[in-house]
Amino acid sequence: MKKFETFTGIAAPMPLVNIDTDMIIPKQFLKTIKRSGLGVHAFDEMRFDRDGNENPDFILNKPAYRETSILVAGDNFGCGSSREHAPWALEDFGIKVVVSTSFADIFFNNCFKNGMLPIVLPQEQVDLLMADSEKGENARMTVDLEAQEITTSDGEVIKFDVDPFRKHCLLNGLDDIGLTLEKGDAIQAFEANAAQARPWV
Image (cartoon, rainbow, N blue to C red; front, side):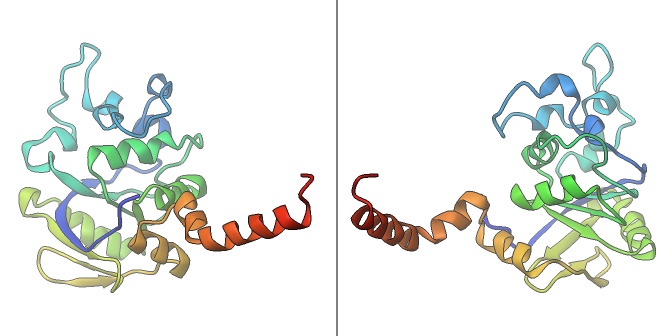
């Protein structure tokens, strides 16, 4: 997993509430177990019509938002089924941060496991960021995980909370496998001692 570093990116407004995982990545794209290649299908039913043509009214199809890396979303983002393909699709599309007043628990946890940062803020601060994100290409925000700050395009700084352990994992690029490998020496020592104590195993 890549380390989460401070970055500045375009933010897109998605004020719709209850954006569920089927909207993020429809069920017909769940046949793969690869994390790559799903970005082209993110928000498929909103981005494209039945003939596969782009919907020009969808926010991420607009020229100013094609390089979006931050979503400012409505309440209860990521609800619905527990498919991990949802954060896979967003990450592959290029989304690094999602800001909302609330997230579904499983989606929230899956974001951290896949190198994305979900940020929960009060409604008034989400409204401020939503308004800022409506500036198109000028809607560039800076997200500093170490300092736990979002800086708007106007220079206003908004602080956010994040679990210290999850912050550590993101900053160091550690998923569950990476965390296990950090204990590699201890695991090897345990295995060596176990082999001596129980050579018949």
